Image 1 (cartoon, rainbow, N blue to C red):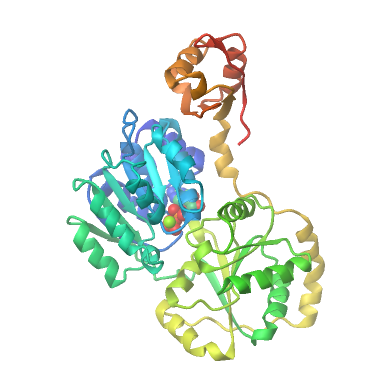
Image 2: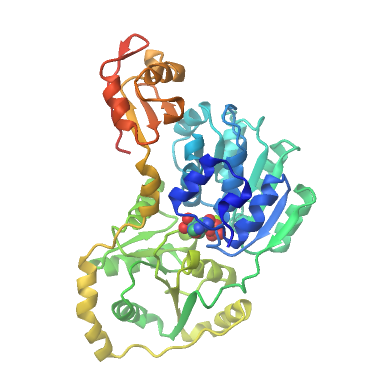
Length: 479
Ligand code: ADP
Ligand code: MG
């Protein structure tokens, strides 16, 4: 058990970790944090759910130079959802250092992202295609970039992003530190590491692919046309708090989703054919516990971290063994026990064999629940459906408590600059420099994070003050 204060981290970071409920470092964090602080290049192989984000997030935030306006760290990830998730986690870790983390990804307005990047930005996290776009159009500068991170490198390879990743690598300063994270290590990833990393230390966290003690497996042989029935029976018997049901195609996801929804299940779906903003909204609602059963394709659910996920269903077997490992990685996270239920049709025995060989054990085959068993469980299941599952964002809320985002009705158009806001806010009694967080100035409005529980003091204080001679209204921002 290693506590974070043994790493010689600054109080701002320790306080943020405490707020996140991170008290002891995970195995991968134990090894990665000191190596990153030591400026080493790294190749890290570790299963999903082991805490990789914070393993690089903590040292990166620790070493960030607040004064510098241009981005110092660039993180490349395979999906937009992951970009958003990592952006949020890093923002929480860097909260008290007032670090600005910007996420950039496709299918979302380029202009808005460019606008954000124009302001002081410490960390950029994005998908390769959109990052390259910004680089080519000159809206993202790599001049001050000293750390490049490739997260979920194997998935970026699977999705055909490799050429783009290489182009970006070639554009970054040679003096950079490079960290590569991957759940698996195919040859092409090793080659990439050899070519672009300098004497990387290799960190491999040995946890026999999927730790069976954290994930309980169950296999059901079922014919295609009986899958939906079996799923409904198992949902009833198992009554998962929150689960993901994986299907192999968008069409299969839609079909299952429409079917369950029509039957009144609290469900929603996620697949690559949906609009970006809908995908993000579905993820957010799922995390907030607004519905319990998420039907998804592999791509959409990649790397997504949801605490309290009790079950994963392989409604369709994945195409390959690595996808299986990633799906299972959605449960049994951060030391919690989860259950993985896999359906296999009579035509899929070969694929199943491959998977079992890869994970190194046989999935225990179970008898399907009999009708009386399902009947008996029904009442409890229905009661549970009526209660909305509680939000899993508690730990986030704790850190947010001390921070209030305030909204001011003036921005660039009124020629207001950060220094003008800071000057006025500091003239309020009881407010110090440390209480002012990220300042985000838009054309017409400005958002400012006020730290240490002093949000209302600032809002009240501003009522009797002017900013650059102008009367500006302040209120609590609700986003
Ligand atoms: P990975 O990238 O390895 O798949 P994540 O970085 O997404 O894993 O972390 C998995 C979960 O563990 C997240 O919910 C994260 O908030 C949590 N977590 C990370 N580090 C710690 C820690 N030291 N203590 C408790 N929870 C942690
Ligand atoms: Mg991760």
